[in-house]
Length: 318
Ligand code: NAD
Ligand code: UDP
Image (cartoon, rainbow, N blue to C red):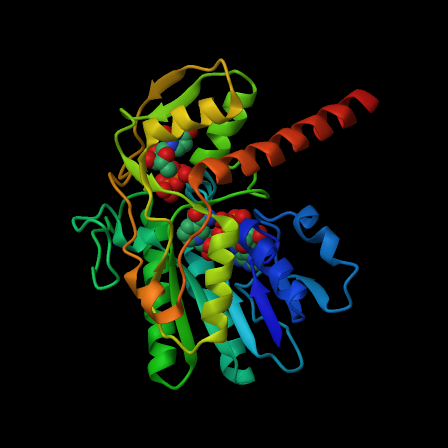
């Protein structure tokens, strides 16, 4: 297959590009590096089945030749990142998604949309099932991301009703190596604070919950979705639900850190709880996560610690 991955130089995208190349596919990675990094896909540059196009998906996507599948991951994803660029986020989720859909339509390709558990907002139904319509504040600061993703789903559904082979994955909090250590998401933030023996900044009282999925599990799900004709939406995440306070304690334990926890103000509209019902992914795609959170955190810590050492070595030698 020849697969176009928008946002392919980002965290999830780079793992997906690698997995597709590893199974013999050709990949065209389209990314504007607004949050992605060239280093994420550097190792793929040697493959003659990998092409990188630096491009903003808000403009028509200039891929030529046959395309079998388009996976649309382009979007800022970390709350501090999307809150800092509200209009860019709205435009990427709307115009960018439409441009990716147009590429799939003119190529007769399968289309898979990276949607999010944020479409459920601050959910009144727990755990979240795909038939829940959500509880999103349409004018709150987070709406630039949530509503762009909801509009993206509406676009995919409209194109699919019109004959496109489209599918939607609703991703729940996913973590692992190659997340940006500085992007403010909870796992990387806590790990870098713990490795520095700095206080872990827990927002609110830490009773809000998240369910953390390790990236290799999610990537298996994406590939199953690419290979199917499932329209979705399908939840993908790890149903092991933890409070943010428990995540902080786990990170301190895994890093054997001397850090303590400090409480900070809870950001506006921060969802109180998050846990996927994954029965649909299990029954329809045979998908379930396999990596336990302690194991996944340990692998992420190892990766971040290795990077910190590398950066320190560079700083010393320059
Ligand atoms: P990321 O920030 O690492 O990756 C996003 C990528 O999209 C980056 O490489 C960025 O440069 C690129 N991008 C952003 N705007 C673009 C534009 N206009 N044109 C071209 N490229 C653009 O984030 P991630 O965690 O890898 O998320 C990937 C996708 O998965 C996003 O769509 C995100 O909304 C979705 N998602 C992620 C999570 C998660 O927990 N990681 C949860 C729900 C949904
Ligand atoms: N969080 C926290 N401290 C931090 C970063 C995040 O307590 O330094 C909390 C945040 O308030 C939220 C949860 O961790 O309740 C997950 O935040 P993240 O930004 O990773 O993703 P979200 O699920 O909110 O999009």
